[in-house]
Image (tube, rainbow, N blue to C red; front, side, top):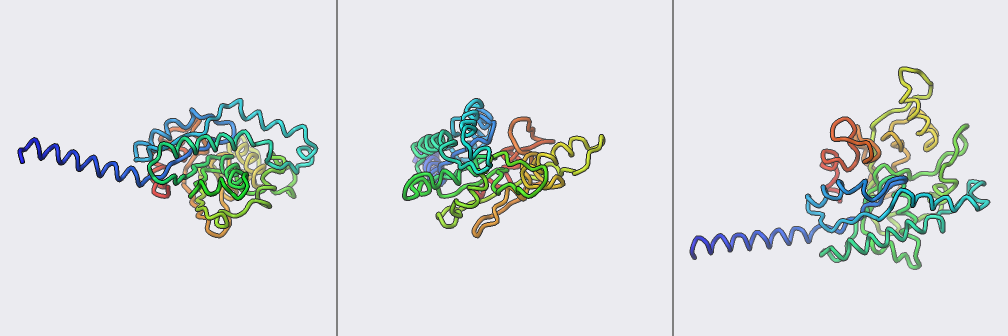
Length: 277
């Protein structure tokens, strides 16, 4: 063979191996957290694509969409703190379906789908898995990795704590099947960006504010967490669930940066858990 023919053959062989490698990656769907929008995760999506996860989609959510959850306010169960997730969050479940369809259509890996569920996207994923008869949605998903998701019911026996989900997390904890029962692998990521404090002081004012937020989620102001979700709330203590704590990780892509305030999808943090996908 001539030298030019050998080069063309090497390029062709290299292209075949690259294609085969890309086929090994599952389709990935990013689920935005409460108050976030699709565009907040574009950089995250690009980073995943650069690592071979080319069939990645983001559920289409605009910030005003979250106002749809206010529909539950007209129900007596909202005021009683016994609100069920459906039909209040059905709009979000439809966005998950659309994003899964988009990712599967772009994938060459037999339709395998991994959900990367940020914040409220975690408990919304649990609702999604059981929202159709015969668990049809659960059959579409092979794995869920939750990123700083509040996954446990809010303790109602702590003075000063108000369940901001108005009972939805209590319902999810009590009624949703475990991931193992659904045949789904679940990995919980929690961050330790900041530890809250119980007592107010000028010197630790920001820690006090963060602590008050933690208290509304887990009942304890002196918890450690990612600035929004305490570690204990971001972990599922269920058989088959893997819980991972990431040091120094901030809750959300909004306001994050590569050095002082990296979030779960920041490049150097992604290095620590991307192999789990």
